[in-house]
Image 1 (cartoon, rainbow, N blue to C red):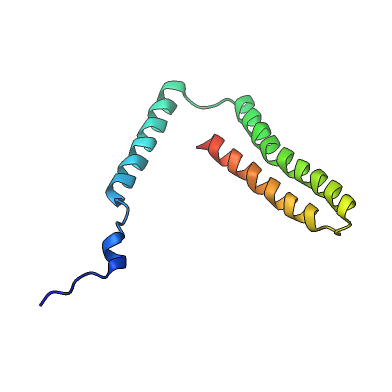
Image 2: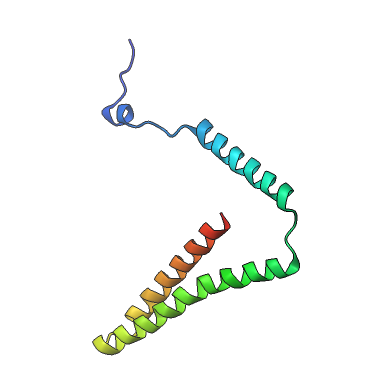
Length: 102
């Protein structure tokens, strides 16, 4: 007697882990090939990348704080909007920086 899968199990198709691994390996190979062609970054290039990533994180965070302070002053809500938009700006900036590095 064989057990039939439940409706939840039948509908659930796990992601193909082998395909995900192949994509990760291909990305690694592509990056390594690019590095071999272009070589190491100079100190100035490294500083420029750090500066751009820093601004990518700081700018949305500061904009979120200013927008939050403005909304709080309009609504008299303490620091509710400031805190929320600070976190939202920080998350947005970190996501942009992460995508730039990837």
